[in-house]
Length: 62
Image (cartoon, rainbow, N blue to C red; front, side):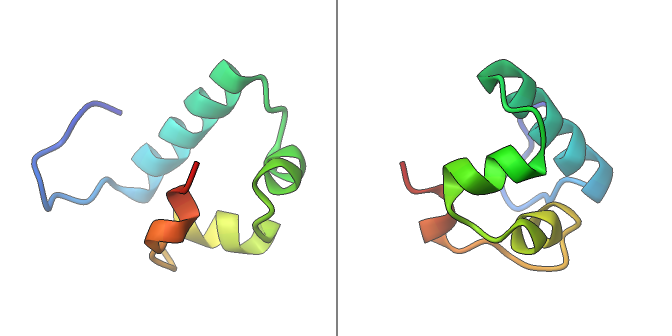
């Protein structure tokens, strides 16, 4: 996914592609591992990237 104009929301497919790319770069093998490392519920992570929920600012905290 490339940079987008402010206020333009990526499609669910673009979000999933971005997530998979980042996970590959970080050596994260799947949503189970992402859940363990982030401390977020796996279902919640999935809903974020299907754009069924909006992530709060705490979802991207370091």
